[in-house]
Length: 423
Image (cartoon, rainbow, N blue to C red; front, side):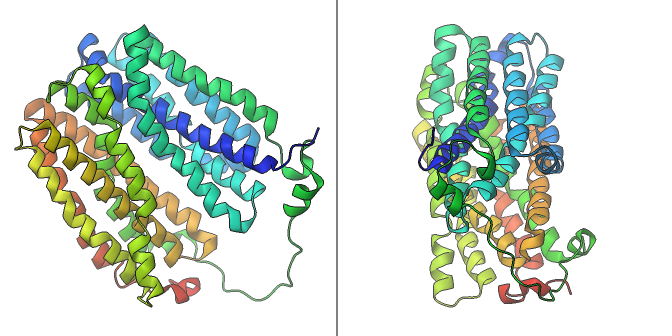
């Protein structure tokens, strides 16, 4: 049996794996109003449980890529999916904060490998001109998962209870695993690939060796102000996203008086606007680059106006209107993703290809570390003060991050000198 365009079936599986990844990640935050009440968890205890996920998730960004290279894409993504799916299902059996934190940590260990394996699968199965689209498709699964999770999980909760919601969403990953193991092989070893597609994906003949400047070492990268600029900028700004991902359903139910069903009907909206922000994030900077602006200056111009929108979140602390609150939250998530798209693209703009993965991983480490620390702070603030203080604090994070970005990255070498950066 031969399957035409087999690689696009694999692209579909990569997209679905990321959808499942984000649905599983959000089940707890969506049923948090019920779980925290049933288990008698304080906001600080809930924050500690979220931290268990975030610290494990952050650390595994530094490890999962190595495991993908060592085990191969098929085995690695299969193991990661099975690990986090079972971990998610185990949430259904918790009876204490300690148990919930432990299973949350297990979930955090498994989930980052999805993105490392998807990137490797894209390199194995797609031509260079197709890879950006497939990477975008796989990453787009995160926003789709975030959009469908609230109504799906609330429906499962209303029908079968919160424990069943964990079991059913986790089981979906095990169903996906059957299809993955059935479909995925390397192109040169796949029994279903057509001769035309095998030829299309055949490795290019090696080119003659030419002297090249060796890429900077990891320690050289850490001595560059640009590396720390990207790390610190994400450390300060990405906690805003983690807050809305983990705390929004709980806030809407406990502070805005939504029922679980009402929350499930609207909590997907900020993730839709975030998805629109991700897709449109590079439009302004790309337009400026086509008009011969220096790349770093263009990316900066694509970040600054959206950083200036983020103080809108302070209005949430003072408005009694739930409609105004949701409009502002949707604006903030849109602005954050426009900002983040430009910020993440700078890694490709500034560094040689040979070290982009290392720099991106280090910046992602800042993302997780900032999220973990801010999550702990959020729990303490909510318990001793209110959510209003959190919204006021978040209004300052992106402007402060932009100042750091400008000081540490704004005067970076132009892209045409990227191969010699640091030398």
